[in-house]
Length: 325
Image 1 (cartoon, rainbow, N blue to C red):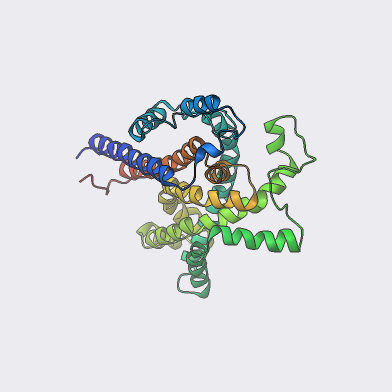
Image 2 (image 1 turned 60 degrees about the vertical axis):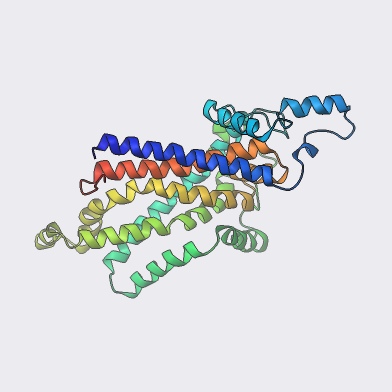
């Protein structure tokens, strides 16, 4: 199978996966207990007005018609109006998405800086106590629920030591004139430290173990022996020559790491009160705001699916050993 055919096949699988996610999401929200119209209409509203509002959102239509309309909305990227704010879901997403991207990108950069560095150290110290400690750390940190780590950090450094903000993205008294001024302010960075660090800790194990394994393979190559024979220091051999060759698979695996970060960001945003897509999705579910909940969930799920798809294609194009059967 050629690379083009492989890409087309994976694209078809991507579309089917997103369709399956959207279908399950539609069914899940319709099976939830409670009546979403309770949050949509006022008890004091005239019956005719209530019915007109329900018809406006299509809640009186048969399920199969609602399903078709939902799929059309996904394809056209017109996800309807929020029950809660009466604003287009696209506008709601546009408000919170930049905040999530800032948190995720900061966390991923930190996770890769520390993960790659510790991975090189673990391979360098193979068989020693340092390697065992780092490998155990990478495995254990993935077993801790991210929300639990966040709560512990808030309790110790926020409530007990009072050295980090307890929630939010900025202080109440901080009123920046623009978004750029906000994200470059000391107050914003101070609020970003805790959630980004916890999310980075949650995501660090993957690049650490991958870098270690790649380093162990590279260290068996002949050019490493040549570097040592030239009299280069072990530190230079490790960080300049071995790490450079072991880094490419780790970088391409960054697409998969985004998927891990998306899953962790939902809980981290909720724990730290970070106004991002994940927290808004949780709030939308609690108030049964179907359009916003569905739109944010589809966005996050599609991001994970697409990044895994991108990683597969990247591997297939960069590594000639990958087959297309």
